[in-house]
Image 1 (tube, helix red, strand yellow):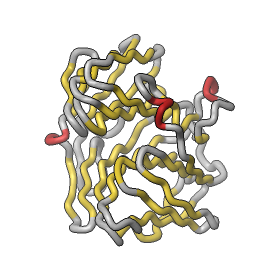
Image 2 (tube, helix red, strand yellow):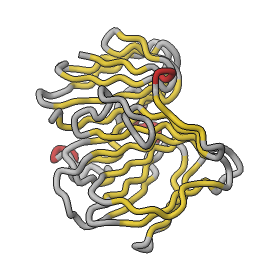
Image 3 (cartoon, helix red, strand yellow):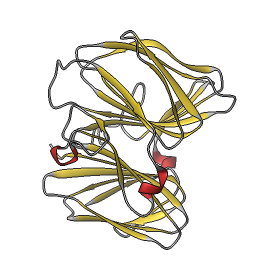
Length: 236
């Protein structure tokens, strides 16, 4: 089964400094059919104007992953963490028992991010933040695991999550095909960050999303040069 969600169908809001699109119900956007995809709860497509950002605010018991598409995001929190994450890289924040953080675009250009929330396997964990620069060549025609709590990924260099799930990225040249296995009991959500592709025969354009479940594999063919972001989580 594949549930295609065209970018034009997404909910959203325009706050001037922030233009947001929501793949799932979020804030003032509510769609009973788009509450979550397995353990995946939020996938926001945000554009943040230069010199602006999210002022300090709290979270708890959520795994929050930021994938930077363009520009950079600068993080600060009440635990003393601070860092800048640039295009193609990710930062993670396990909110656990509670954290107060701010996210700013300190760049001279608009920053474009995917903000992804996954429900943790265990509530009340110790809060954690991390960021890392990954070699972009590792994702040519293959998914590179950027953040994970899957046992099979332990010790492989990905940022650590408090959930049996993973965030991955890949790039495909036009005409290339990539196949990613999907085990029973697992669900996946894929967004084409750039370009266009077919996913299990369904056509996706730039910033379109697709939920995949009850398939043994995800087969992707690039119709244009494409950048792909994939989340894999437990189905229930």
